[in-house]
Structures are given as C-alpha cells and as structure tokens.
Length: 393
Image (cartoon, rainbow, N blue to C red; front, side, top):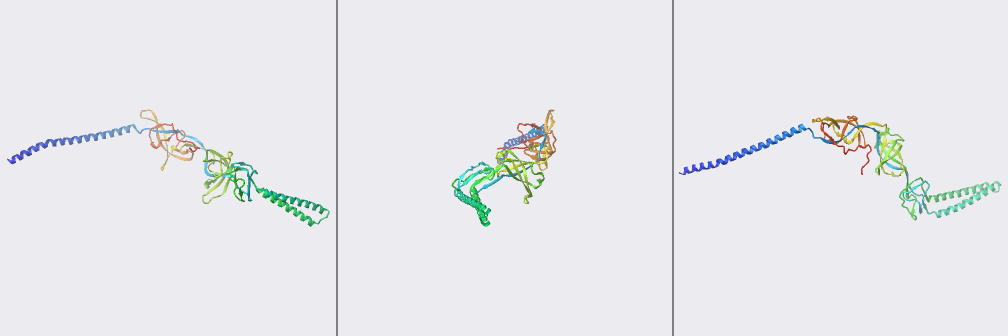
C-alpha cells in the first residue's frame, strides 16, 4: 500500500515539472532568436553604411586658395646690431672749483662752443689782471731797452735780460688765462645734452663726470655678419635699420667701414654703418635689426608659408585641381605635389620646383586633405602673405 502511494506521488510530481521545463526551453529559444536578429541587424547596418560611404566618396573640405604668380625678389642679408653715437663724450673739467652757473638743460641741443657751465673764477681773474699788469710793465721796459741798445746806452746783456723777463711774464699771463678758461665748460662739438644733475653752489673735482653730450644725427650702427657672407657686402652699400621702439619705420644708411679682422672665436666680421636720423628718434645703445640688399633682383614663384607642409620625407603643397563630379558638375579636388623651397622673406617662401605659374594652391586647411578630397573654397579669411610684415601689438 505504501509502495502504491509513493508511485502515485512521483507521477504527480513529474506531471507538475513538465510544463515548467517546456516554458524554460521556449524562453531560451526566444532569447537566442532575438539576439540573432539584433546581431544580424547591426551587421546589415554596418554593411549598408560602408556601401553608402564607398559610393559617396570623401566629404568635402573647406579651404582657402590662391593663384600662384611670380614676384620680384631682392636678395637680402639680415643682421642684428647696436646703435652708437656719431660723437659721444662724458664731459668733465680739469680743475677743482665751485659751480657758479649752469646754462645747459637736460635734453638741450647745443652747438659747438656753447657755454654749458661756469665755475667761480673771481680770484683767478684777479690774478690774471696782476700778471697782465706785470707783463705790460715788462713790455715797456723791453721796448725802452731796445731803443737804448740802438744808441748803445746799455749793454746787449741787459737788453736780453729784459726781453726774457717780458716773455716769461707773457707766458704767465697765457697760463693764467688758460686756467680761467678751464673753469668755463663749453661744448666740444654739436650735439644733445643728457641729464644735467649739477647745480650752482656745488663743488666739483677734476675728472668728475658732469654731463653727457651725444651727436645722434647721423648715428652709427655696429653689427656683425658670418665670414661666409663677407663677399656679399662692400663699402657704401645701402642698409635699412629698424628698431623695436619704432617697428613701423625704417631708417636708411650706408656701410662706412668693414673690419679688416675676423673674430677668431665667432668667425664673424664687424661692420659699421652710418644711418640718417633727422628726427633723432634712434638713440645710442638701442638694439636694431638690419636688412642689406645683396646682389641683383630675381623673380621667384612665391606662396604663403602656411601653404607648405614640411615633412621628414619632403615639403608638400596641395593644388586645387579642376574635376567633374559623379553628377556631372564641375568641382575641385586636392592633389598633393612635392616642392623644393627656396629663401624666405616675411610671410612668403620661394618655390623653386614643383609648382607652375597659374596653378591654384591651397593656402590653409590642408591638414585634413589627401589626394582626391573634394574642396569647398572659402577665401573670406586669407592667411598672411606680406613680404615685410610688421609686429602686432
């Protein structure tokens, strides 16, 4: 009886588990089917996108372009230099004394011989008058002795003594007059006075620096160039000088001297040029940049430096080439060409090989280009293309 009950219980449990197992199997089948549909859809989408992109080609790129032409090119040497006064000196006196009057003002332009400062000299002038009186008396005695010697009233020895005394007294007058003159400071040449810091009543000693005097029109500029460029410069060659203080202005001058010696440490040679400075804007000590025309003018194909892509395997320019699209409409596409670059000036670079006059080149936006990329030209903002750019504030 117990055995019969156990068998009925097992049959009842088996019949209860069968529907649950079937539901689990159908659920798993549904999950696998759904996953297969998702994976299939994604594969289908990827294939269709690739097919569309292959048919559509590369997306167009927005660039700026310009037509290449030749420009006249003046070969130039560039150098850096320092300005030096045409004449410059720190004025001082040879004697000690007390300042009486100061006539020079800071920044004043003076002429040669103008009185700049006067020292107290009353006692020196009084002494000069004493010596002058003694010299006058010695002259009278000497003149009288000459007359007496003519009639042999005195000996030749007495006349020689009076003559020597007169010469000695005259020399003392000249010496004292020179001492008085040394207490008047005068401009040794025309120029501009520096900062005047002395005042009346101030005691100064011999050798003390009193004020500076500089002639700055014209003005010298000293610069050096490598020995390899010595053959390209000569005396009287035109130079143009530019200073950071006046970035938009060039001052013209000429080479006045070339050192006969090359510095053994740097292998550079020193050159001196004289530059016109009528407005006296350039000042001694200023740092300057120089440009020196060298040789005959040449014609080069010039492009903005931004249009050249420099790579380890060569310099590249993209040409905007005329083409016909799949829809039959004309358009532009990028074509990569290797070029040989030459000298540079400002924002420009010379192209020696690889580009012809009349070619349309890409001047900006080429980083996203490759051969065959369609182009959209937008020249609303063009890159700099100035042979003589000016610094921007």
